[in-house]
Image 1 (cartoon, rainbow, N blue to C red):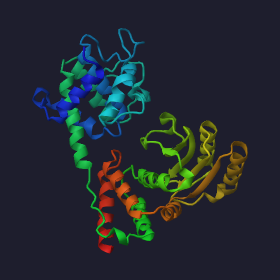
Image 2: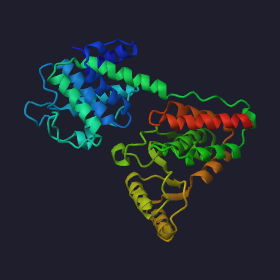
Image 3: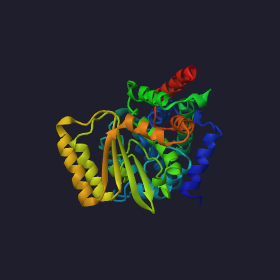
Image 4: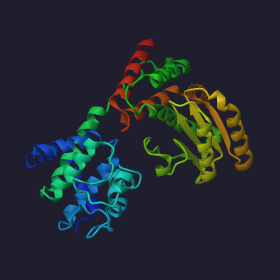
Length: 370
């Protein structure tokens, strides 16, 4: 029998090859697929669970996939199948996925069948309705789940093509200066995008610059940069100590936590202290676009001193822009940073089109100045 992973890959390949099953689906089913696909980057749990149940139904036709937990009468463990086979394959195919399983999403792990009356509190009511109706289509209306998956994957592939914006290289890169690139980043970070997601931009900027620092600065000799995780996942669910993590000899060496829209206050320091106790890094950077909350400044200094004394970790609190400006002075070639950062923006799956378009526009303006 074909494995879960092999089946998922073969269905994805049908989508890549533009296999058309849309005529086999009714209007409402197609609309529900569109609803899920448009929100997929924000609803990875729903997407992963839908994929898992759809794949499971193909291989186990007699199983009621609405009974997604083994504790339910005649149920099965969807989470086990997801963790072992589906999520790893989604990651391999570069499709949206959770860190471990879609069933880690609290609204989806409730011990109730996924009927149209499911009691789990999926926040987006439109997504909840679409998800439950698609499950109902498969289980009650006997719609082939492969048709749903192929059309869902096709929608995601198409939306990603639309969302990918090509950023023009610099025309006179030799004229690029630290001042110009810092001003460019500042304009990008502070712009009002009227949507969420922009807080990932400085994370991508620092990640790009650390890729260079690890090769050029002696402090980072023999260190590795952990792959950047989802910016929407909580540190608890992602099991990370911060936005960016650097390891040395398989031990956490340095952490960078970035706050674009929040001043550094006592609460942020207390959270950082707990992470330091748990993960034991040598340095912990907390960087914000705003100044330190003056009312918390003395208590922040006390925590920094205590953490250094008791745990040996140096907490460094600073602004995003001054730190970027300092790091720019350390690297040999600004153009390498610019190209790395532009590429990360272009391919990032969590940024909206408006974030990418802004960088493209700023790059165009920069080219006119160089």
